[in-house]
Length: 442
Image: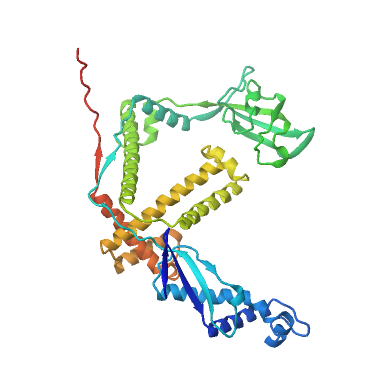
């Protein structure tokens, strides 16, 4: 079979459906259709072939039959010719050539794994950011910890009013045009005032209210609110404050430190040193992760290959579909979700996904080629260990994993991990030291 190489890591080739193969596909198509249609005088699935064709025509079977035949012959052609496909094929077939007496020919255009010409991937020198921790960061981290350990204490007395940061317990009911709307009421609701959990203006109008006080709050729903009937609508919430609580934040003293149960830490000074080290370790880990990512991208940049564009689109669209499903679970569209999770527009997010897909696929193909160049193979011990790892992760038996997961995919994961390790183990991560300041010439 002649295989034509095209730009963009694609190939084009012709496949022939033999007469016998198409006849068998017609038989399968008839069995399927016969179960679906009703023919007077026969139960579903019981009509003879000649009767079915007399009523519906043999042409009614062609669509399913062609699909069956293409599925069989396409995969045979790919397997026999060892075509390393990595995308969905585009099939071109002239329907006017469909015949039961002569072979049928169709053309396939499909993306294949790109031919990768490796560059340098071992003994690379990569810059790693130098990290440090200043006193302000330590103070902020300690404040967050103290805030997390704060207790809510009831505010009492005639002068007790709601202030920003307090938690109010209250009943509320919302009205639009004087009519209560669904989902707009609750009893004994707890809300931290100033957390911006409610629509704009709601929490601010509660500041200064006392326990036992009732009040009408006039608000306007955002234009992008998830409920269609409330988008941009004016509304009134009647609230009844039942209780006010304030945060009783602990002090950084030895009693608090003792409760944290940190080995070797008993005094405020020791705790501050512990926090500083924790922040430093976290920054070091982040700096190393960034350096490793720079390392992988350097290996990719050093290689030469042509990435299939449609494969990038497929990967990006898959991620986009997942994000849209997540948005639906929260009762909103993707545009609204993005506003809350990063502020990107949908178009900007799509561009980000495409970049991520390009980087992910590029690294995957380069690592695969490195594993091949290094002669990496998966041992039986490694395969069994990986099967067990997958089984433990998804709470399955090893036998179930072996039945459900393609062995070649597991082998590829193992050799890819070894390629990762080779790149990292031979790399040198260099931290740039601050250059000494030179005195200005007088």
